[in-house]
Length: 73
Image 1: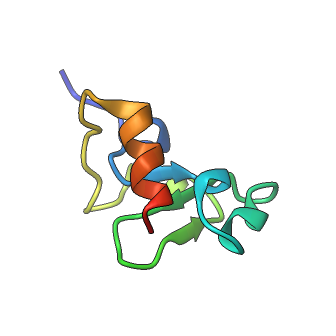
Image 2: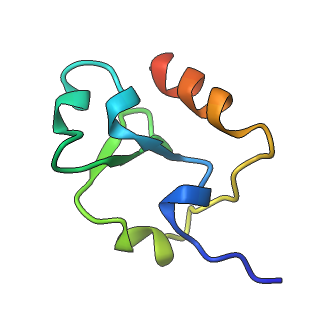
C-alpha cells in the first residue's frame, strides 16, 4: 500500500504553534513547519510535502513525540 506524502503523516512536519518564539507567531498564516533541518522551516504551503525527497513516514508513537521534539529545539 502506497502512503500519500503530506504533513499529517510526515515524521518531520510539526504544527507551527508548537515551535518556540518567535516561530510560533507564524502559526496563523503558516500552520505547518518542517523540523528536518537544525532550524525549522515554516511551510507556506503543504504541497511541497507531496514531492519532498526527505519525507519520512511518521513513527507509531506520534503526537507526544512530535510535540516534545518540537519543544526541544
